[in-house]
Length: 375
Image 1: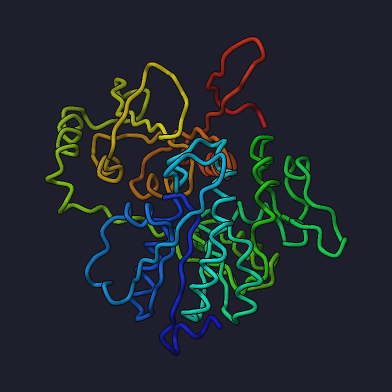
Image 2: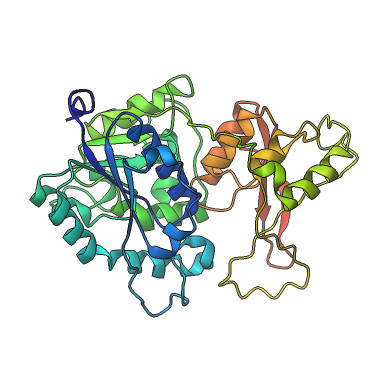
C-alpha cells in the first residue's frame, strides 16, 4: 500500500482535527503530496476553510477544499468551528460536533472512492467506514513520536476482548513499562487528557505518518512501529517557510518591525534589558473578565522569531511552536499547559535547548510560575 505512491497517482483525503495547529500542518503535507502528482481532497468545516491562507495557484488542479458543515449541538457556541473559537472546557462539545460529521463524510467517501484517508486523532469512527469501503487509512501525528509512544499500543488504550483494562491516570504518572529506555513522565493534569483521548486513536490503521525525524530521538520512531506493528513514516520536522513578499507591506508587521529594530540584538532573557513583545490571544468564546488584555488580530510569528533582536522564545511547548523556535536557534522558555506540552518541555530541557517553567497552585495562594521541581 505504501509503495503505491511511487507507482500510481492517488486520490487522498486529508481530514485534520478542528484546530489550526493541526489544520495548517495537514495543509502543508497536502502541498507536499500534491507536488508528487497526487490529487488531494481537504476536508474541514466551511468557516475553517474560509480562514485558510490562500493556496498557491500551482495547486489549483490538485488540491480541492471540501466544506462539510459542523452540526450544531448544545454547549458549543454559535459559529464555533475550531478550538480558537472556544474555551478549553468546551473542547468536549467540539469533539461531539465533529462526530456528527460522520454521515456527510461517509457520503463524500462513497461518492468519490479515494485511495487513502489521512486523518487526525479524533475521528475514531472512520475505522469501520474505511474498512467497508476498502480505503487505506493513515494517522498523521502532528504531535511528536515520544508522546504517541507514551500512549502505548492499541491494546493498552482500549478494553479489547477483555484482555486488558482501560488505562488509568496512575498508569501515566511513571515512565510506561513498554518504553525500554530511560525517559520522563507526565503530570496529573496531562494524564487526564491522555486517558480521555487515547481511545480515539490508532484503530485499524494501515500506517502512521509522524512529524519527526530519525536524527531527533530516532529510538522513539522505532518504538512506535514496534508498538503498533504497522509502518511509521517520518516526514521530518517540516519547519514552516518564512514568507517575505506579502508581509513586508502589511501595516501590522511594519509597526512590529520598527519596534524590534530599535532593540539591540539580545543575548538572552536576563541580559536583554527586558523588552518583551508579548502576544496574547483570547478565544472568542472565553468568559474571562481580566481587565488587562492585549488583543491582536494577526501577528507574523515567523517574521518576529526571525528578527535578529529576538534572543529567546517563551512558548507553551506545542510541537509546531517548538519546531519554529528551534529552526531559528532560539533558547526556549517553556511554559506548558496541557496535552503533550509538559512532556515536550521536560525532554527538551534535558537536551539543553531551553529551560522549563511550570505552575504550582497552592490552596492558600495564587498560581505562580516556578522552575521545575527536582525530579
